[in-house]
Image (cartoon, rainbow, N blue to C red):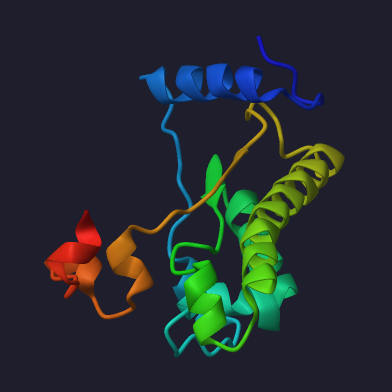
Amino acid sequence: GWSRTKSYTMSENFSRFQQAISDTTNPFILDGGLATQMEAYGADLSGHLWSARLLHDDPLLIRRTHVAFYMAGSDIALSASYQGTVAGFVQAGHDAEEGARLLQSSVRLIREARDEAWNRMQEDGTSGRRMRPFAGASLGCYGASLANGAEYTGVYDIERSLMS
């Protein structure tokens, strides 16, 4: 059995994750609707960065949303970084170093939210027989970075010479 109180190494987390997704007797619940929930909290997610813009503009709202998903029963929540790229942050007026820092902050935020939610669950007794939840990074494909729907169409509009 896995401890409900300790921190795990990456290797231990991988083993826990494999065990969790292989368990056919218990559902493994992924968060969902990050943008929808943040909009319900009042966030404006217009623009090419979508939810990733809030890594700069309102990181506490991102954390609040992650915590809410964990408290609602998610076994894993994904960072607010799907649409985020260094190039996308540069396009939004940040320098490349800040863009990289913002992407790294998405992982910090999801981990902090996971830990906050887990601590709350242990304090109020709702952790019960739950496993300690996971924090995952959301990585968008190249098409997502274009913010034009290319991840759905496969039309990347890049010169053949740039693909080699």
